Length: 302
Image (cartoon, rainbow, N blue to C red; front, top):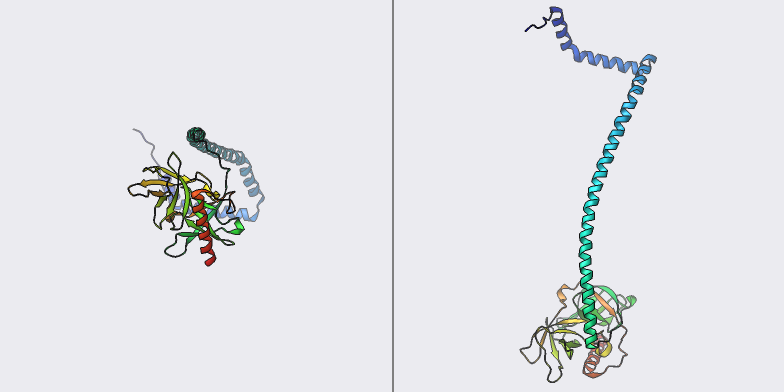
């Protein structure tokens, strides 16, 4: 095919331009810089003319970039809202199931209370306290709580955690108090055993289990029977979970308390309406009164 023939002069000029193009650009840049610094009128007018001519293009490009950013963030926000909406729908579905379950349990509880002719105990208020540590010697199972008289703690109040009854307050200072655990050797708690509500006393033995004593003649317990407070003596509200019967092989049934002393970090102190001046009656009341007098004597000796 035919191709244009490059002349000798064109080849010479092309080689010169290729060898000195960088030098030319540097010199041109220096000339433009000097003209800009010198404030030459024609150069300044030309520069502003270029700026004015390119301003609409720059503004359009800026608006396009801002619009793109806005669309991007709107899209991200939309998908984030969709995801959050799905999470809320799932959570709402779970809450509806739990609400239905709670209503069913409330209905069953009301039915059982009607069958047993249970008298409702007024709601107790709670005081949450931190467990500071173990109190007493090796033969006493007690703990110190970070709550005292300044917080409204009084002698004889019950102490619970999420699992059930923990013990009772046996000493109160200004900012601390002592709680005698269920498992302490001197602990005596009036309780009810099983669905029939058999009266008995849960006694501690410095171990991880309780013993059921003073069962009525002819009455017994079976493994799996639930144990709750009876409220006798007025020291504790009725119906507080205590534990479950695990062994009846001996004459004295054994109860595994729900409370685990090694896991106690926070407890609740029951601000119950009943106090030590309430008359105590019955076997459970006599045992409870002896327990209080014994604890009071120990406190006074210390």
